[in-house]
Length: 348
Length: 205
Image 1: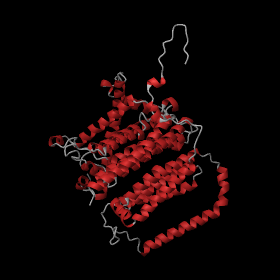
Image 2: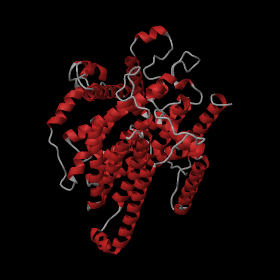
Image 3: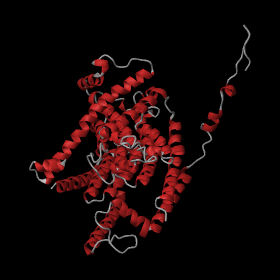
Image 4: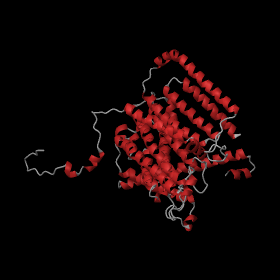
């Protein structure tokens, strides 16, 4: 995009600057719209599985429900508890929201259509997602209230535990793809299964890792069955208890943006990203970003499905799953994958 | 120009947050300033082209170490008066550490002026070509020239980890952890009985 602005007579630096700003807006604004719609979709799926109607009043089929909610929240008063640490209390939701948007910089929407095509793309995603915990922890501490604090402690422990196994899973994928660049990882999946299927999930060594990654990404985003950070039966509303109005809405949006990001990562790392599912020329007539969106939507449906059907984990079960099952499993798969690659690809 | 602006922004923020890390009265604020310093340090690393180091800085220090710091500091009940009383007592030690750090900085700058480090290929013949990706270059060095040092560091870390676990582990007799395998092996017929009590009579269990 930089070259386009250069043709309009800008210097290279300014062209880069304007192009980057345009790129950020081009990702962030549709993402916000997508988050609004995906909240509606989430509620509809959840309602359908509980044999209810879900939101159906505002707009046709209730499509405008999220916007009505947004407007309502926008008009409410922001209440800051008098015992709260005011500065941090207000910064915390901003951190969550910003971090949820930042990681999208490296997700490729089509061949080369990525805001920051950096060498260490996957590490960047890992780094940014590890920042997500700060919004929650700071909120819990700054609220100066018991339940948010409990929730913050839980969130810190939970996110760190599952990030460890996510790291090892990503290493498996990187080993196979031979690059940290997300576009490179997508390209490495072209025709991976018998030259027909695009995607690492069609790989006996990576398929189990995908399953672990899907479950870990639910834990990482604190979705049901791992939503212990806001377990309403125990902690009122968790770290969001003291928040109201827009600061609450920022958590809401940030949370769903994170869920979408995890769905996008599932699609990009294991299901071929913007590649069509099958390596067949007519499928390439459909633009890549539509395939990516379809895959993201599919994974979001899985997330909602799980949310609607699976009961919440107990805290010790959550820790057991993370440390005693996923960590050894993903660690042994790192050994397996690298061993297999040494034997076949890098051998001799 | 953008690089220059970014450099001064990051450098300024590193120094400011470093100062506030020391100056804040609230330890939680200190840790948060420290995190900001790490983050801007990572920004500086990106500017010099060491993107791998930058990402590691964020993942390891900001994402894991600082979270645990924060975790501990939040739970501590800190008496500020006592902290300030210790200031004069620890002042000489602090000065000594500051001197050592300053000497190291001085040495580092001096060594750089003399010629810098010759980073090379695994066999140690030539410097890495510019344009080779960071990760590949570091990987070639770590798993080539410095393989044994690297593996030794790994073993030391493993020993430290096991040591820490052994030192802090204690058998707790008063808790009843769930045996998941046993729980899963339980069938309804093991846990329930179907009784057909006669009308007016109780059930002996």
